[in-house]
Every structure is written in C-alpha cells, then in structure tokens.
Image (cartoon, rainbow, N blue to C red; front, side, top):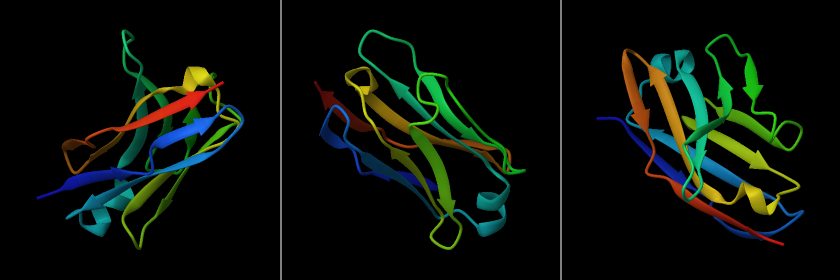
Amino acid sequence: QVQLVESGGGSAQAGGSLRLSCKASGMILSVFWSSTMSWYRQAPGKQREQVAVRSSDGNTNYADSVKGRFTLSKDNTRRTMFLQMSNLKPEDTATYYCNFFGGGNDYWGQGTQVTVSS
C-alpha cells in the first residue's frame, strides 16, 4: 500500500526558506521513477493550484507565481520528492500537497501547512 508522507512545513518570515519533503512509502522504484510528480497548494477560500510538476521525462514546470523561487527535486534512493522554497512571500501561505500519478494510480499526501509572515 502506497502512502505519501509529507514533512517540512512550518512558519517562516518573508524572504526566508523552507523545504518540503514527500516520501512515497511502499512505492516500487519503477513506479516512482516513471511517475508524474507535483506539488499543489491551497490557501483558505481559494482553489487548489499546481505550483510545480515534474513529468516522467524530467521536464519540470512551475507556476508563474513561484518561478525562480521554488525548486522541485527528487531522490530516487529515498523515494522522496522535495520542494525547496526560497524568498518566501506572505502570499505563499497555504496548505501544500504532494501528488504522484503513476502506475495507473493517483496518490496524494496529507498536506502540510506553510505560513509566511511579513
């Protein structure tokens, strides 16, 4: 059974940095390797939005609002995906969710809260 376990959320001041992690527990390497991996966020009263996505061929795209500040990466050995967030802004405050789509299945993390104060 696959579970996505997120960690790394918390509070930061504007201009600061945080790194989110998403461990795909129970996922076999071939599925991890071939999955489309994404980070989404949802702020109170707003729709969930995709902030970063990495396709199986390695192409990574970012929402305009985070481009140049956020970086998605992965560690195959640890079956873990990361979101490095730098130069944080108050508008980055949201619950962040990781998502893997692979092997015919769609997996979601439980969400981790990020709060940025000015």
